[in-house]
Amino acid sequence: MGFLQNFFSGFNKKELMNKFLIVGIGNIGDKYTDTRHNIGFLVIDEIAEVLKSPLSSVKHGHRAEASYKGKKVILLKPSNYVNNSGKSLLYWKNKERIPNKNILVVCDDLNLYFGNIKLKANGTSGGHNGLKDIEEYLKSINYPRLRVGILNSKNFNKTDYVLGEWTDKEKDDLVNIISSSSETVLSFIHNGIDQTMNTHNTKNLIDENI
Image (cartoon, rainbow, N blue to C red):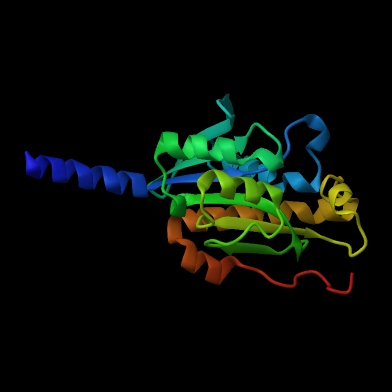
């Protein structure tokens, strides 16, 4: 009996380690669709299309399930506002029994210039209220996050800027940024965080004299 317990325990542990929860955060509602704060939603939409797994409405969000390189992938867009993203993430983390290191949160970042992306294994919220809420629900800062830069000006009101719509110039570049962010997420799932940070993190792609 002990052998069987150990066998199935090992199997279940391996199965859980091959499950990933990818959470893109943003604000719900049509009026926020094209705003900078919603870039996390756009990345999730792109990955769902790449993996041919449409999102559907579920408890606390919109969810898709797919397989990628032998890994089970749960895509999630919380059905709430950015500042209240933690409840949905924690619910699906617990339901799917996914360890923190297999969670990846995709969000906008005002500390990075537009066009830059930065994958980190852990860290503080950096002033991002969505990450702050997730941190409070998880009781931990030890979870991976992919920050997608949106800064394209030095003269702005923070709230107005993140809730503002993309400029025409930004829209022209957005397709490539979303694609690059999606590739980073898929690399995280397949290759792990260390290799992905080394190969996909970008820096100073935008003129710092803006």
